[in-house]
Image (cartoon, rainbow over all chains, first blue to last red; front, side):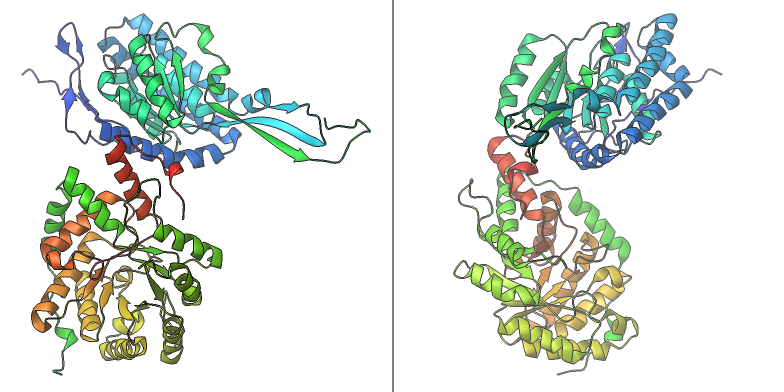
Length: 293
Length: 299
């Protein structure tokens, strides 16, 4: 007797939980006109809930030692490694060839490890002691920007997403990500990996749905510190930049291209989501130099 | 007055309560009705600070906040009251003079209530003499659980007497009462002993206020009203930190007791962070943008 296959309903990931969208809507990404899964079509309220969860989690995440964050990112890579087969299968379902899928999964794991390594090193790289005229010890250090809203790359459903998410959380931020609309399966499976790998709930939140519908909310939410847009739709970028002014939000734009390229392994990706804090510390005159350092 | 047997108070149907709650929480309130509700909530808040670390300045801060919720947006009401420890009542009274915001003080060995009657009465006297408009006392849960309902009743009567003109709120501390039958019984004792308000919690115990507990208390108030004609107020306190939940409380009051209770003479929220969430909702309705805590004063 032939069996009817069960089509998985992928739920969204908010605050460490997997709720359905509050709107009750869904959509079916299609490959060759055939539906491959049921996905939640998230609403602005799901986004709002995710931002609340991200804000709640961000402080604790930023306060972890950089070394511990590094360990947790490495743990994500480990768990990813254990679930390789599922990712490969999903990528193939989304229309990738087997070899390309394997390569993408492997590189995603490697990239996670790459950014795990940077967690306890980038601060040293981007900190400076500044020469000032006066008896002050003046230094600058990067600090996490806070909550980042992300439009993940549309074409690179897994590798692109992993690259963005790990560079953001490596620096102590929390994020709310809208996954690729046409290739969303791996994003939610990646969320399942997050949920089982010591990442505190709320640090990464992943929604699926329609980019155009959520565009303005990602830009206008007063409690989002930076919006990252991956793609090249000039009109959308302009809209985000205009709305973001209202809350002095930073807007970052990255391409939606070939994430296999090694240029995406770059510590400046972490620095993009940092704010520089400068401290003036009064000191005595030292070494007869007259001024500070 | 007729003796009441508190061993014989009505039993609560827990399944029925949960069913009513689930119907209330699945309703949504929008647009104009939501805005009216939000304004009403602000005007029903007892802005509360009850920390060991409270200082005069902290009390002055929340008094200012009670009067100036968000000056950037004119036309907002003040909160109903400010709720502090007895030793800060004088400060609060001075700060709030002429504003219409009342001063409530917890008393009677808050939050445990474990002390002698003399000490509790002295506590109340201190609050009332310093000018508190309202006194929030705690129920003796230990005696209640021992079945010594007469003691609990008499104590409330004594404290009510000591309050004079000040209105008395009786905190049941429902998180320590165990079940809804006890909540109902404690509500009845408090009301018959003369409470002007019954209040769920001190805020120091989890769970604090919940919808089911509040519904049981509202039903008790309704029955008491039918028996005696006296309107007793209700104050859920602790754990109500977002507007949506607060609106559901209002809905429940309206459905159970009716519009007569929908003002700050008969209904209050004991909360410290609710006000900011309501303000954020009001600004969201006004500007269309989701808001951030960064743009609102902390106390």
